[in-house]
Length: 205
Image 1: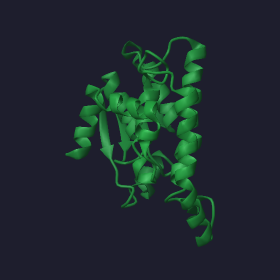
Image 2 (image 1 turned 120 degrees about the horizontal axis):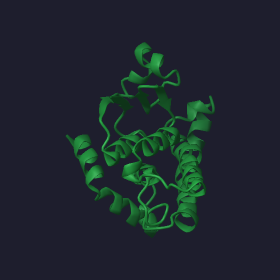
Image 3 (image 1 turned 60 degrees about the horizontal axis):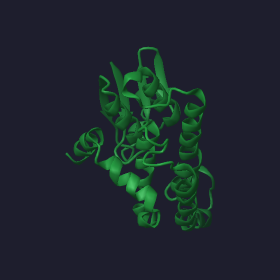
Image 4 (image 1 turned 180 degrees about the horizontal axis):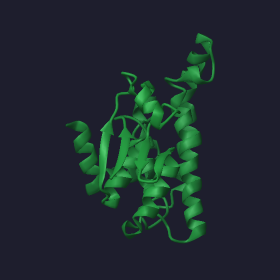
């Protein structure tokens, strides 16, 4: 059985949604990043990066959300969570990579400026820029990358749970999501899926 190491409020929600959508048999290990669970020796032995998510499989440990999402989609092809066509799959991976390397990083400047700077003034400057950076990212997603009704068009894929996860951070970053009509509609459409409702109900419990 797979194990997903997850923290509520973190990007690992995308992997949890993918597992639920796939109907996978898995164990959820909930961690508290606020309490520093990700820095404990037993977790670092699994994931030396000290971050979530980490997915423990029978073949080893996977980290990084795009890799985990691709693995889940390809491990459960019957769920149809990724395009079968190689070019379309690569486009999905390009989108997920953008979410990981650009959108998530823009958000992380709000609380984790210590990853990039040491001066307090630098932290404040990065925090001030978060909302504008998020607006720029989601404007690009809105106009160029969200094919609709799902990221890849008619097929719901693991990219949709990932976009939902990051779009759900917008209000907390001082951004009104309704200025991105298509992204906002996508977020609410995803929220209504049974697998997503199950995950969110567990989060609220």
